[in-house]
Image (cartoon, rainbow, N blue to C red; front, side, top):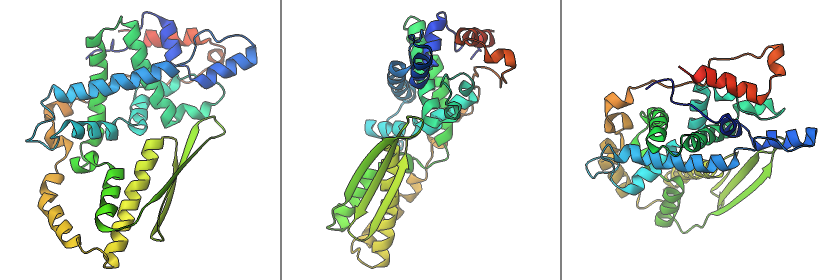
Length: 309
C-alpha cells in the first residue's frame, strides 16, 4: 500500500464529506447565507453500502462461506459483517486515521470524538472518494480492504459463534422453547443537547427480568438488551429448576464447544491478518492562532498536502 490511498482531485467533495449537518445549519444560522459545501448525509448512506459490499467481497474472494469453516452460510457472513461493521469499530479506525482533527461540526467540538459522528465521517469519505475517483471500483476496493483488515483484527479473538450470534433471535428462540412467556419490548428516542438521536430500549418478561439500556445506535442497543435478557433468563430459570430441557441443551452446547471456540484468527489467512499498515489523514495537528481563522478550504488543501507522497 502507499500513502496515496486517499487522494482527491475535487477538494469540494472532500469538504462535503467532512461536514456534518450540524456545521452546515450553524453556519447558515450565523451568516444568513447557504453553506457552500453542503453536508455529508447522503455520502454516509452510500459509504455504508460500499463498506457492506466490500466486506462481503473480501471474505468471498477468500473462499467464504464454506461448509468446512465456521462461516458456513451466507447468513453467517451477514451476521459477522453486522457485528464488526459498527460505529465503535469504525470510530476507532477513524481516530487512527486522525479524522477527528478534520471533521466539521461547528461549535460542538465535543462531538469530534463521538463514535457515531466519527463512523459516519469515515463512511462519507469513502463515498466521496468513490465519486472523486470517477467510480474506480478497484481503487475503492484497495481503500476499503485496508479498513476491513482492521475490522477483522478487532474481531479475531472473539469466538466466531459469538460473532455470528443474533442476540434477539437467540433470546426469542430460548423463551419459546423453555417458557410460555411473552416479552414486552419498547423503544423510545429523543435528541440530546447536541441533536444526536438517543434510543432507550426496555424489555420486560413477566416478573423475571426488566432491562433498560440507552445508546445512539438503535440496533446495537437492542442487541445489548437481548444479550443481557438471555443471560438473566437462563440464570434465573436454571437456578429455579424450571428448565426441564436444560440437560439436553447443556449436552448440545458441550458437543459444539470446541468448534465454537474457533476464532477469526484461525479461520482467516494469518499472513493477511498480520498486515497492520494503515493510512492516516495527518499527524496530530494543534491549531495555532492563525489556524483559527483558516477557512475550511485552506484546511482541505493542508490535508491534501499531507496525503500527497
